[in-house]
Length: 254
Ligand code: PEP
Image (cartoon, rainbow, N blue to C red; front, top):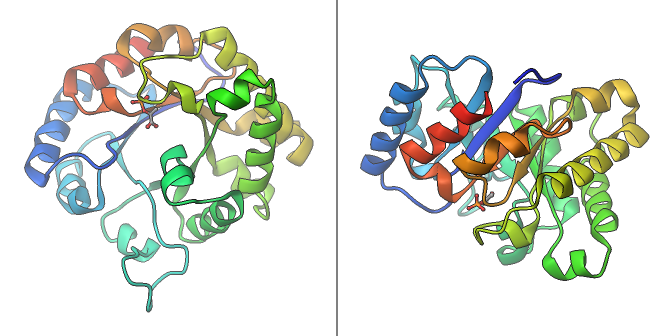
C-alpha cells in the first residue's frame, strides 16, 4: 500500500498479560514481523511488563509504548509513573486520552493536553485518542465532539510537536463491540480531523500528522480501512492480544 505517511499500527494491550504471557506474545510477533519495514509497529503492554518486553524487542523492528503516565514527573505522586521511568525501558510512545480513561478516570481534554506537552518534553510520542459516543453520533454531533477533543487535547503544543503527535480516531461505539465504522464513515471523520489540524497549524503540518483508526480493527477489515487516504494506521485492542490476529492486521495493511 503506497501512502503519503508511514503507517503506524499500535497494539493496546490494556489491563491484560502477565509478564510470561507478554513475553510469549512479543516473541511470536518478533518472529512473524521480522521482515516488516513498511509499517511502524508499536506494542503497549501494561507497566508491569514494560521491562521484559523492552529487553525482548531490543533487536527487532517493534517499538514500545505505554498506556498512560503521570504528567508531573518524579515526586510525591502516589501511584503515578513518570516519563523518566518509561524512558529507562526505551518507551517511545504513550497512549493518551483513551476513551476508557476518559470514562473511568474522568480524564478531560485539559489534562490530556498537559500530558501531551509533558510527553513531548520527555521525547515520548503521544498517541492522542478522540472519538464520539453512539449517542453523540446519533445526535449528529460527531464532528463537533471530535473537533472539541482535538483542539482541547492539542492545546498549547507547538506546530512541530503537533506534527510528531499521533492521533487516534476511535468511535467509542466501535471499541471492543465488534462494530466497526465503515471505511467511508472513518475516512469522513479522518478528513475532518485533518481539516481541523489545517485550521490550527496550516496544511504542511496537517499533512504530516498520522491519524490512526481504532475500533474493532481485525485482519479482515484492516486493508479496506487503512486503504483510505486519511487513515494512517490503527490502534488495536482485542486483536492485539494474539500473535496471529495482530500480525495478520499488519501484513494485510502492507
Ligand atoms: C482500543 O481499545 O483502543 C480498541 C480499539 O479496542 P478494540 O480493537 O478491541 O475495539
